[in-house]
Length: 395
Image (cartoon, rainbow, N blue to C red):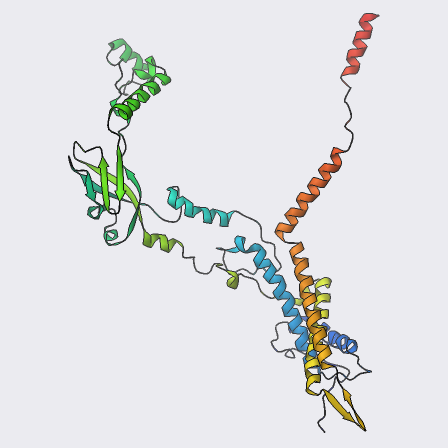
């Protein structure tokens, strides 16, 4: 008959006893390994019942339980801080460390809108121009003169075309120019003699200049053809019909530059997989966490013992046989593990950044509600001297 190994009643842990050895160099883990082994064996019925497990089974379950705890805590931390972590260096270990809130990620996202709005962003605007000829309205943008010659073979996006009504100031003539030599000498004494037309600084208020500029612009808008353009495909139509030769400048970006701007810098956090969280050191885990690990270790030991007893589901004895409870142990282990995982996740969610902010808001509202019920005293200190003064006059 095959001899079934059973727990010998004691164990002696040494580095290398666990399958992976993640925590073997931690002295607290080494000290607790044998204690957890004895505790689990007692919870499984030893020494009254034989426990068909060896110390290496208990050590493996203890290591797995510690790994699971560290994994659950790290998953929560990554999920809670992912927006703050993306784009940060991967070299630093954030395990057990607070991540200070910042607007870095929001600013990085908003820069994409800045690219489209022309107010910053990741993509540099480049310049190009096209020669406008007298009487010609439609132009092919394939004939652009590019700031970067190599862009002529790339796909581009036009972001801005500089074709607007000439500014009114270039047609603003100062009616007071030449009113006399004395005025010009006076301006020179004020340091304005080199301005042209300069008399406006002395003779006219600023609002008069603004009104005159506005009159010129309204005149162009109502009485003349409006400056505009139509961009369809590669065709640019200029309005009104050009009456002289000039250049039109425009800003553009290449689709290649836009695609390159979405590529993250190397050695930075990009997603869940490379967030810089490592295994928690067992000795740094608080008693509440260690208690969870002990219970999860016991559940894993039940599962392993259940699988072993399923192999030897019945043991023959004289005139009868003994049926083992392997299936029951596996069922208990699955239920206990699910309950422990759910409990840990609920505790972690309860201390998430969002949950804490909601709790602070609720606490603040409750305090304000209580303070609103406190009677507010009427301040009468200033009235006492007045009443005394009035009494003195009456006397």
